[in-house]
Length: 394
Image 1 (cartoon, one colour):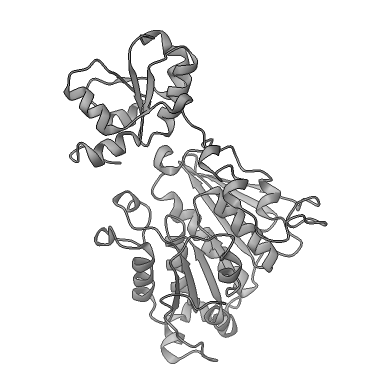
Image 2: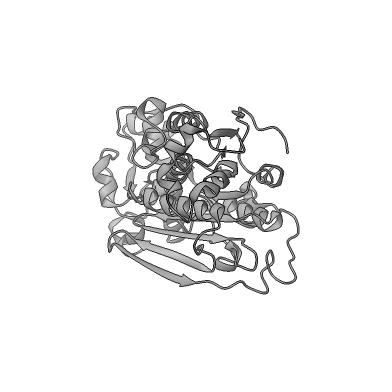
């Protein structure tokens, strides 16, 4: 495997040093761990795919547990909106690579852990080489192409895939790709249509939720390394934070699965962007007639006093955070039933946070006969970044 960038080499020792015996003493007195189990942890190599909401608690707890080598694959930077849930990163890390602040947090917590830095997005070209050097892969990614990529690579390499996902107040966890067990494709044979599942930036997420799911993922990783207990293989653990309720769904390996089935069709990694409907710009959902207006044009028109009806298609709680002056609030899901409130002959500019919902709104309006309906490109986030820096960002 290619040498990872920024690797902090620390050769694994055959035994535990005195300071390690003291550090892990509460492990050592557990019969299920003991001296040999702690050595297994020290010799283990685990890859963290992403060190955001899920990867942060996983990385910290695996480092604390004494996993000897942690690979970190991430290329994103820390943003203020990450800090309410991504506990590896602090206020002073804003603008830094998550890779840097994660490696620093791991080193501060446990200097005995080696950190391999992979400053890259996982792709079909590099995933097999990167994953091959690790015993367990922890998928803390937040997008479908990466989840399918990690799953397929783990099945092809024979590596356990510790999976977790979070959305608003709900979380999931499972272990995929164990011998004879189901894989992620057995649960989700096809990805959802592009845009069907909002990102956490659009839908929101309870800050403590990734911590709980991440700790479950860390627990499963430690169990796999030790060979202790029953892994979450063939089981999907579901968590509802509002109800404070766990439930479990049994999963079976699909004999016809194209990756882990009896006659697999996928024998090498594919184009996962295309598989998830994100392959080419022409494949993306777009506004009818590409009816977009950028923030500079809208600002110029408003400053000239032109008549433009602004339609805010976000939710009421978002509208309370910030809004464009004079905008009428009609959430996207209410728009079909409230078309009568708008003038079909007026020039309408729909906006949301990033432009995705407003693109759907403009397409809906255009299809309903609003020929002068457009979507604000980049949404209110672009307005804040370009026109009005004082506008709160969220």
